[in-house]
Image (cartoon, rainbow over all chains, first blue to last red; front, top):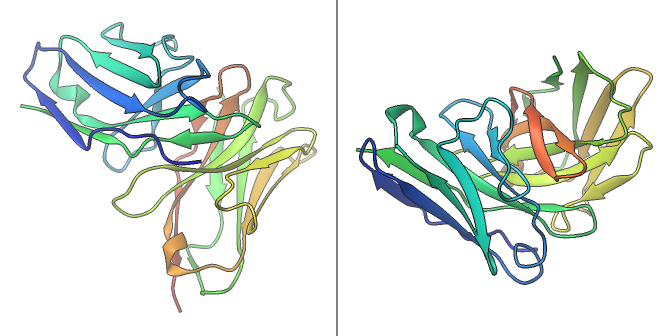
Length: 110
Length: 120
């Protein structure tokens, strides 16, 4: 299984919206809805932000939303805030009870 | 509240075997909806899923690591373990344990991580 493809970096100004893409194949993202997104701040463990492609865990701001089209999943953050600056990882189920991560996208809030 | 805590050596020698333990507290390791997984992160790099185990002992592995990895569980002591053999410098990383919610394949509770350095 190959890592999912994410842009290395994205940036946006406070109040704007940004979208991070996560591209896989018809064997992973294209077949399964089980895509999750994680936020990782420096020196911290990752935190689950989206699961099953579009669902938010309790306590996660509704500024975070997930979607999918074909082999690409996306994370959108609206109303960007300084505290959103972090690295974001997507993760997809790839069958046989195995998972694969994307390479990560560093979000900079300008 | 569920809490996971990794433990193990911070320094291991090349060619040796790494053994890490993740202790689960504040909840049951035998819950039918959960897998228990290991994820690692080399310095300055991204996350890599290593493998996971069900309370029954059934284990699943990243194909790229499968020949060197064993993940096991001890429900009586509420912990699960990772063994990684034939270590090289490329195995130097922060190792995290996490709960994988079975229905969604998502890791919703993470340990703080433990740093492992492979060096002679």
